[in-house]
Length: 198
Image 1 (cartoon, rainbow, N blue to C red):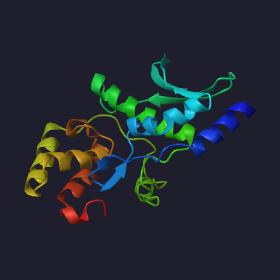
Image 2 (cartoon, rainbow, N blue to C red):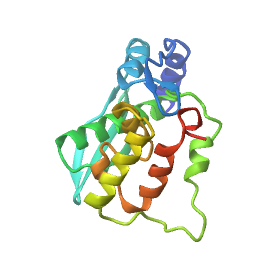
Image 3 (spheres, one colour):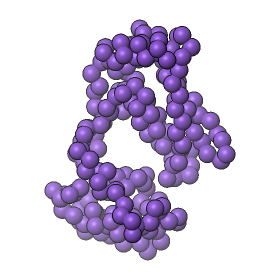
Image 4 (cartoon, rainbow, N blue to C red):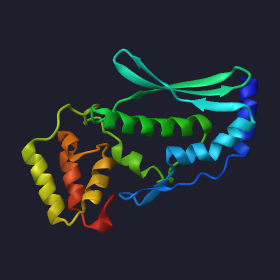
């Protein structure tokens, strides 16, 4: 890996500043899109004989994102990452794939695509020994969905604000919410705007 490592070291020194052009309205923070990451690194990689390719592979019932950092010498670093969408349709898979491509692309090149929240988001997700290791399957009932929408309406949340809150919990649509997250999401929706994310 000597030649690849030397080339990557040189490329990292001349990567363009990473522009964080996308916004997360829930946490009021900015992050770099996949396009931003590629734009900041592509020319520096090419100048040093490097490139990144990200094909997919379907194996044992799971779609894997294969990311390879290739050097013209033939040396490479390879990573695989499972694509597990919250919504089982083409849009769900596309969204999950783009999300995974951005994170793995940044990881393999040593980029930071999001603002540092000092571990706050990760801390909120930490499970205690009494909590279940995995979320149960299934989604909320029609009655629960109606109640959620009523809460959002009473609290004055616009549709895009509601979508942003739901996205923080890993869901693209309110119809995808699982029972284990339902009450927590309702609590976040009920909070006044200045308290969101506290």
